[in-house]
Length: 140
Image (cartoon, one colour):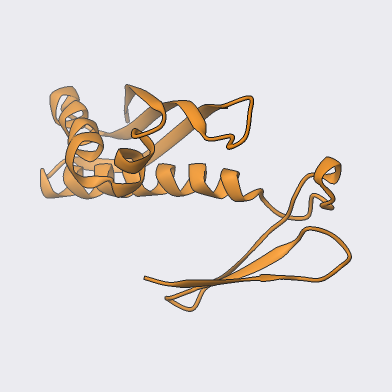
């Protein structure tokens, strides 16, 4: 896996990234840090990536378990260290999984498997942050 990140110039703290799969995304800093608030912060993208990674796992596991999942939302709340490096110290993930006739036990199992075995992002972040999660099943 690779990614190229390029500074977009002396007018601020904006960067463009091109991923190994050929996709582009932008990042920017806060105005207090010299940015112009035109794109997500790099740490926000880390948090979003963790949410995407675990949601991907949960949906895939539920589909393979023949569960009729129609939506999966993950809301992440994170706290960071006060001093540099300002790593994540606490992350809470709240899963809202929607579908017809979903089995709560299978949804709980899918989330647990993601966090204990499959989600590289959350497993890596758990090395520096206390990870907690909750699960809400919504029936259609």
